[in-house]
Length: 258
Image (cartoon, rainbow, N blue to C red; front, top):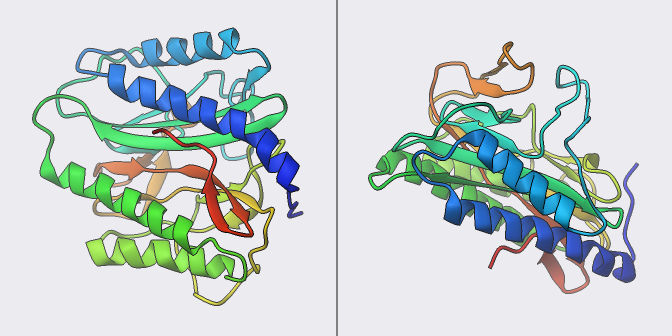
C-alpha cells in the first residue's frame, strides 16, 4: 500500500536522510587503496551506535531476495558486484569501482542512499562514464518526480539516460517507497512508459536508484554469501540513489551529501 506523508512527517524524516548522507560523504573521503571492506562496515556500525535513536536497516534483514539475515551495516559492491554486496575481508585495489549502499532508521524513520566511485589515482574512463550515467539518471529521475506527473515519467526518464549512454537496463531491482520501513510501495523501475502508472502526489517519499552494468542486463546471486548480485559477464556496475520527498514545490532530496 502506498502511504503519503504529512509535511510534519517529512520533516521528521530529514534527520535520518542527513545522517545517511553524512556517513556516505565521510566514507567516500576515507576510502582508498588498501581500505578493507570490513573496516567500512565497522565504521558504519560505530556511527550508528554513537547516534541516539539510530538503528541499522540491514542487520537481521531477511527478505525473499536474499539468503538469510544480511548481518552487516552497509552494502559494499565492488567491480562486477552492483547490488547487495556483503562486506568481507578484502583490501581495495587501485582502480576498483565500489558502490556503497546505506539505509539507517533514525527515530523510526528511514533514509536510504547509495554512491559509486573509483579508488586510486588512475580510474578507468569507462568506469567514470558508467558512474556519471547513474548520477545523471538519478538527477533526471528526481527532476521528473513532481506532483501531477506519473511514476512512469520517472522511470522512463531514467531509462532514456541509460539508452543515451548505450547501457542495458535491468528491471528486477529498482527504487521503492521509504518511510518507517526501508522497502515499501511503490516500486520505482529504472525504465518505463511516460504518462503511465501511479500519479505522483505531495507526501510521497521514494528512493530513486538507477544502477547499470556496462555490457549486460543479466545478474546472478553470488552463492558464497547468498546476497551479492553480480553481472553475468563480469562487467562492472555502478549505483546511485537518493531518498526524496515529493512536495507541493517539487522534489526534495532528504539524503543530501553536500
